[in-house]
Length: 411
Figure 1 (cartoon, rainbow, N blue to C red):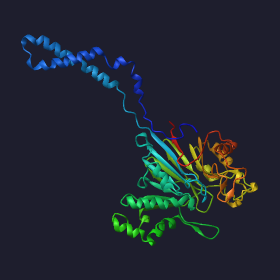
Figure 2 (cartoon, rainbow, N blue to C red; figure 1 turned 180 degrees about the horizontal axis):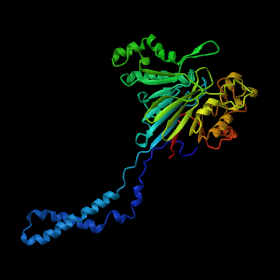
Figure 3 (tube, one colour; figure 1 turned 60 degrees about the vertical axis):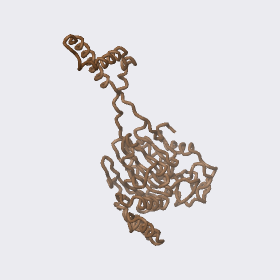
């Protein structure tokens, strides 16, 4: 992995350093000696008599002489480094589906924007919040009250259950703070006869804790906590996903666009645009055709959203789990994800610089994905990179693990 992939804190030095030609330019021995004599002479200025006028004037001249030199030295001193704008993309969780493995957190991507003076973190946006999201944020020294908005791609628990933890923690310690924007698609009827509803999910996110009596008990101890529980901290922003990108959230120089994509009803994919770069978070999007024959497993809508993108973050299925390989994975589960080679081909077509593979099925090193076996044994990072490169991608492929971070522009 290239050294610029992981964000590092380093001080930037001004180009003014180039004006230091030699050590002697900064400390001139003769000037120092003159300054020493002048300071000593300064004690006599108040007692000069007429016979000492000429000598006093000479002393005064020698005292004043270094002042222009001090001004020159001040001009030559290096200026403080200018804070450059920057963008950080961090995977807060890389597990795929309800499966568990070795403490890997559920799906999530944190996007931070700012400048070097604020560790690129003036604005903090969380995309999906699977299990363990709050723990990963705490490892980054980010408190729940510092998140500006949460964007949900769809109503699957491996992308949403961490929001409960994040909101409860924010409610406990920051009830008096700003409401949290939770952004998601509006209610989406499924062709199977039920409705996927982000609005109802948020409205009832604290119900278990209200019914258990915990909310009332904690409010009795600290009246600053909101009596209605964590739902009262949410500002819900919903939109109707379409086949064309639409701006659905913005703040300052940053805007977030969304587009409809296929996985389950109501699925949406996002793009974040900033002055220093942009990133597409595709979620679990796949092709509108539910199964082969189809030209690709990737989403035409996400490809439209990703035109000219710097970074694409995508859920990834490795072909090894295909039904023809006898993994045991049901075909509908396999086919509603995008395959690594097809993601590589899409990243090449849109001209992306970085392809970040996350939500890995199967996880690197795993012999099973939940109950499904990995034919041929555990995969390596090299296996995933080779699969993406088989699609023709020649940019940088990053096989994600929790807290993998990419910085734009790279240092």
